Image 1 (cartoon, one colour):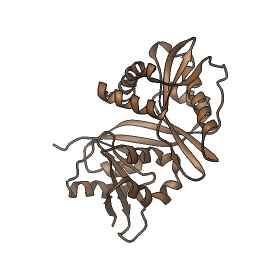
Image 2 (cartoon, one colour):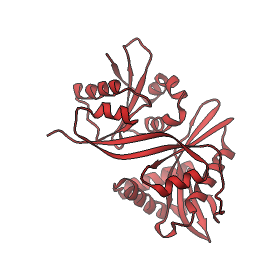
Image 3 (tube, rainbow, N blue to C red):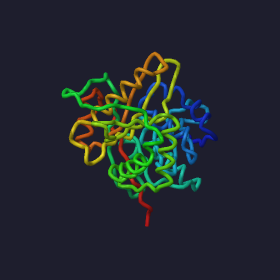
Image 4 (cartoon, rainbow, N blue to C red):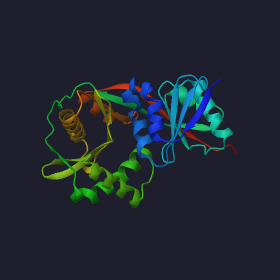
Length: 282
């Protein structure tokens, strides 16, 4: 028997899942960001009974589907899917998590695996072997038009999805306001950009999630992504407000160039996530 409960707010979710999240900060950072910043988010916790400690949790987002917590058992994931159906909650278009959890959630409905991604954590910053000439600066309003165009191209290339002008503008303005967008300049020309999600902070550690990391098509093949990623990472380590920092990012397992670049500057894979598209039953 698995007990599932929907929570009323992001603060309640953060409090209820605190002990689980604190032990896996890097793997849960993405979920926590969505839980706190996505206005469409809904929050769920799972346990053996109403009086037992929380053993797993999930976040439902209109834009991102349902995200399952690390090490959610297949039985728990199946119970969550049943809970959605029983209460006539909108079934998400996608589900994301570890392969066993995703399989449990999607077991009784048509589905296709659409993406597999490595979660990387920075071990230590390593400058590229052949130093990549370039300068990192915080993006400003003067870069907004270029960033909007690149965000749309990034979404299309990496996820085969379209991003309209309003959504692209919202992402850029939010990033500029937080000073969380950086551009990489080579020979006086802006050739790419990188972003940082809202960090999750405890008393001792700040967890950063990089993304997007994007180099313009005409500038690829010169090592700029290595220089950009290393420079952003070094900047975050230098300005981190807590004694410890953890820097993470995701990379599609099929993007061999990106995976090689991240490993070259000091990132190591720690988890493999699966995204599954759920099809409506006929």
